[in-house]
Image 1 (cartoon, one colour):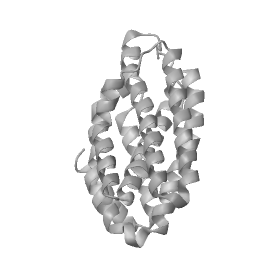
Image 2 (cartoon, helix red, strand yellow):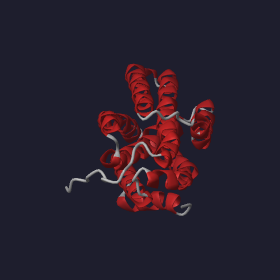
Image 3 (tube, rainbow, N blue to C red):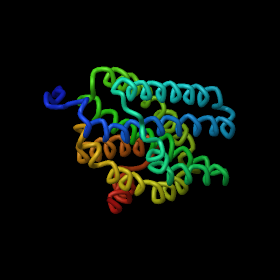
Image 4 (cartoon, rainbow, N blue to C red):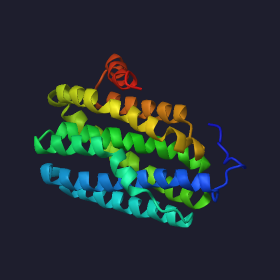
Length: 231
């Protein structure tokens, strides 16, 4: 696998970089904060897995603090109001599903969509990050695969009863990913992160997760296309 080098023209102290970073940094902070709350709430519903879910929640809180430190390292104040609005629809959908006891939908949103979105973003960011942020992000992305794995394993074990709800949840939530990617395309580009690369990494990881749960290759293509149709 070829090694990607950091662009020699990347100026981490330029105003245009810091402006874009204020929103991207806020998004990863908010994403980890959302995940922390989501896993804590899921622990109350999946009592058999409460210890593991609480552990994952604490891990997400650690990640949040790491990304806060990344912003401070560049003297950037994260734009948290922007980030809260960025995640608003996924947040509302998760809370609505939780209120209805739709744990399958909650796991698809958090353990598949949000974790895969994070993994894709972190993988594309690492080669172009400043040294401090790269070290933090490399540690975080290893943990994110553990979170993805929890959702995969639970949904795989309950696939037959979860399938219909998974398909409905995918149809309702996957298109939001493309809306989110479009919203940050310009800022991500300033940081050296191409939208095409983000989309490719997300689609590969999300498709692999769906296959691991039990969907056939044809089903994976169909489910993935529901997102692309909204791109």
